Image (cartoon, rainbow, N blue to C red; front, side, top):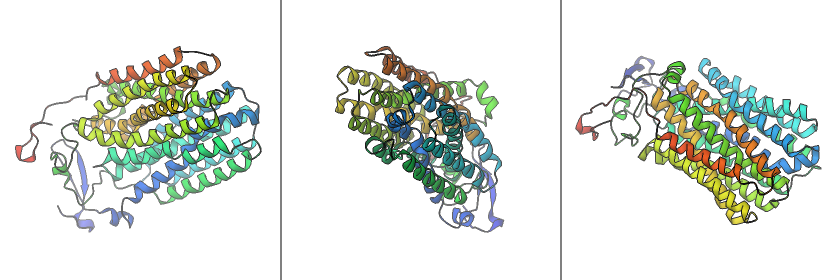
Length: 457
């Protein structure tokens, strides 16, 4: 393949599936540096916004004490943030598709909203003000940043979407660990304002700088060093063959929804988010009620966030070998079983080792779903509609998050409650079962020449 950087060498070709590739431009010709920067910058931005979800959970006991909130009021702040973060993801995808090269607009808007959110949380005790400033604006800001980062990685690494999306989205989990540790041990009503103000400035600077440097490649761009036509069919250079078959044709959002598979993915996100937010809210609420020590809260919340990130990386690699759908089902099964483990921990006075162990399993199982679905959406509905289709799927987090927080509230406010744990666990098991009925739309058998090492795709 001609890898010249000269504009005359730029051309579009297609593979046997009809997918289009723009070849002839190197990443260095387009960026002036390696495309690895388009992993590092989104990763750093995700790292910066990670504290909004897990960090808030760790800080909840301090915030309720300082602001005089009830547990349900604090859960309301978290729940509305989740709704706004998930609901703004289609807006982030829409903005990304309409920007040509620079991504400063959504990233700077997101950075500003995050700044306002943390400053509001630092200075206001009025619930309505915090709901507007932290939950609404902070949720919208985090949603714009999250979706812009995911979309950027998918375009710069079309041949390694699963691994790169997992790497970047994993930072949304483990990036919160330093703040979780600090919030659990050192945050108090006296230093809350200074800590959150400083954090707000740091988050703004990181996200804004990343946004100013992030770029989009041309549509259908493909790395010059890889032959896309061979990559499409040769398992020696594309190890995900034959477990992850490409879309048979492009499915824009309306067609993807009519296929029945996009709604099923939406439901999977609802179930995944319900478990994930149940775990966060349960741990935070138990600490608020005095059932978890500061050590147990920090250890469990930190492990939950770390496993959430690590689980995404592990399952992305596994999905290349056994398929994205099967790996998704396995992750949901692990997450569901972990909820019953947390029930066992609660029945045994929340023993530190038991709580931390099942928190790790819960984090790994629930976190994997988000990154796997990016690749699954692309494989089943085509490259052109990956961002808008995933934006629709991700909004399921708004529904699931509220459900999970409500279940956690019932656990904390109703001593010896068992039913919410059972419901949360069954949601994971239901999600795992649901993946068995998911089928790639329009799939047809394509026979490939035997020298490529593949008989069927």
